Length: 394
Image 1 (cartoon, rainbow, N blue to C red):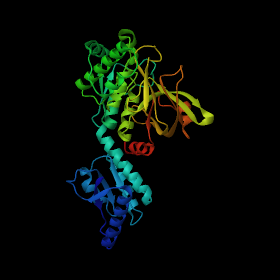
Image 2 (cartoon, rainbow, N blue to C red):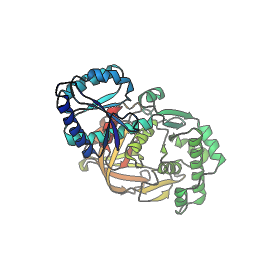
Image 3 (cartoon, helix red, strand yellow):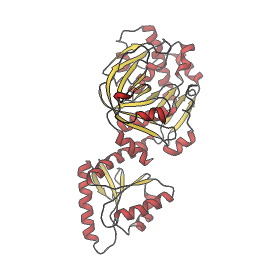
Image 4 (cartoon, rainbow, N blue to C red):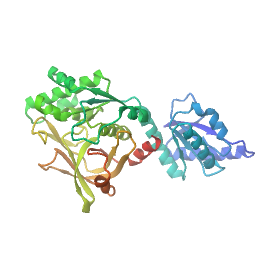
């Protein structure tokens, strides 16, 4: 990755010697992080880092502060009052209502964190302008899952678009859906073809609404579909998620926000699910839901929706191995992220259709003492370090 470095160096008598040492430090960090640094190249279309090469640079920084893009990553060394100057600079920056942080540590830690910070900063920039569709209000039981749209936009630039369920019903009645590899694969599975067609019509309705409102994500008050449509949104959301359009259940906007953040940070499909059971002696828990991205399981079968016995739900087998469990609040003021390991796929009658058992070495107490709502999000692989840097930069 190319990175532009804004270099601030003091005018001490040994400036030349200090600059040589600073450049050697920068080269070492770049090599360890897999980054290519370009010094003071404003035309380079690349993320930017501020490098404070020593004390006495505060005035230089202040003179250029309006040229910098939030959040600012301030790289320091352990020499020549670099850290002290950076602390004064960050304090001033924050007094101006700006966002940033100091990166300071040994070479290995600095390289690892800088790589994660740059990726997190790129995701922050991408999410600014994301349009999240709310198809109906949150389900009545989600009493802690409402979001202040104004606050969300202030914090990260994501925008909530309210869409009435009447429009969803009208699009479903219109019928039709796009053909793609996921639809083709679904039709190869053994299931009532009439029910599958009805579920695919719901998928088509989601796609048309997504395109009409230019959405990057949507969540639907899906239980409202049961009586008038006699089907569910499980399958439609499963296809959308496989296509990279984040799709959430029950009108749960904090979960949709969490899905978007986790998906963009990890680059992997995200499973929105219910924590269903805690197995404290084994440090494990069971999570389940009736939908998941169709490109996440190694295999899946089609069943009815658990609570209603209607529609088409997905019972998938997610590969065993490392995973991340994540949730954030609707204003991003709180978050939970834990590294876990998927140890089993279950097939119980009294749970939603896709069921995974996850080992969590730490973090089980959170679910019973300070949970962020009900639903949580899971992706394969450990991206907890990326998540922490993302929230450090928010």
